[in-house]
Length: 394
Image 1 (cartoon, one colour):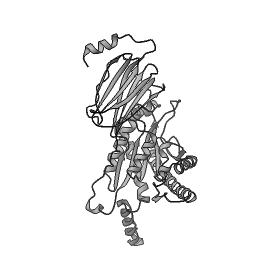
Image 2: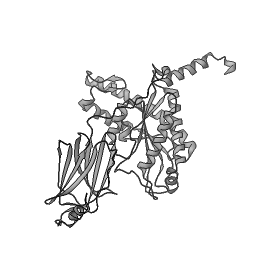
Image 3: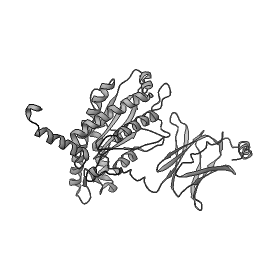
Image 4: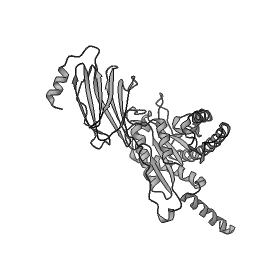
């Protein structure tokens, strides 16, 4: 925008109840773009779409910029450019789009470290198609096990912040990417990153994406925090029984879940009692498997460093609530502990954490690989070979 027009914006008289816009933050995800306006006070706004060409118009009453907005990412799938100018007592912003999208806007109250915010989400019409690894001839009738790796937080949600400024969202994404790289190097395994960039995904959508990819295991990676900076060590969590019960009630109450597959069995056309029994069986099996894989991962983390809890812990974390996918949440360390914060930002230690988590995952699947997978065939081959070996040679 020309400097003269920006100077004109600053010189316009603004009523005393006007809100200044201190900044714009943009987060580009594969299937959506989030634009966040940081405000000095709550505002009245009007949001609507126009076509030919496609664009989103946002009118903010009494709004004014205190500095120009930052440049947007030219690689953004949806956002082409941002224009703005005064319109009477309003500030009009136009978000030019590269394609037709759905739009959603909402205001957020202050929550540290942020003040008032106005959020505009540009949403794609179709979810990003799952990544498919081409099958080799030996895998033609066998599939890889799929591990969904969820880096916690992201976008305007930084997670916990260490004393030296390390942000949980950045640390766990680095570890998640290293873990995915290591998993994809394993024969018979394929990793799916739920978040592969600095953008926000709701907790329910994280589960939804894992289900879209037909994941056999869901691993959520976090960095712990506590008011006492001496707290340290790793932890592994699985879903609590109470959390499972509340999720079962929610699942059965939502009609959209009726025809979904749970534990390989459709709940559609089943009476209420049978649906409840099937769901309970699926949840019980998923939690038992979660405890199993969680134990393997915790054992490997214990070899790497201090453990905060000696056993696998149970909690009602939302990301653990898929009723038919074994799910674990790994707290890698305490980012609020100065020593562990330094380790968490060290790529070598991040790689060591990823290696420990992979070792635990590998040990679990060598015991409990799903039928029809390459790992299950490998396990059966090893068992047959062991059975054929004379006892004296074992």
